[in-house]
Image 1 (tube, rainbow, N blue to C red):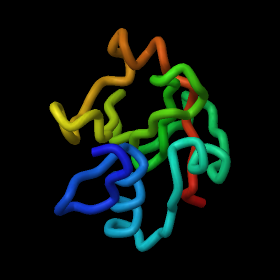
Image 2: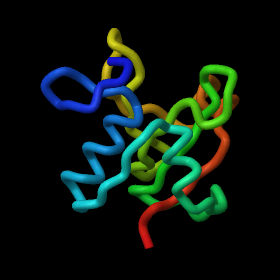
Image 3: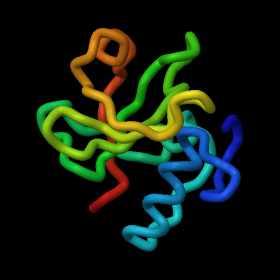
Length: 107
């Protein structure tokens, strides 16, 4: 859900990231995907670890989508109201073409 930040009403991509970080690690990370990208530290794709953030250009502008890397070349993200929260492969054609890089707010 566009602008969604609540488990009962739905999430957008940044709302999901905010919720997961708060619930799993007690870390406050807020704002849009673009704001999260600016606040996080860039890391080499080869160094991405579970819990790191992955950024994509899905709307024709930088960092318009964010997901959380879960390992094994997969990430979890909120896609749209029809498909909801799901796990996708980073090397799928759609996401590989739009991948901008990984960043971390952990350590």
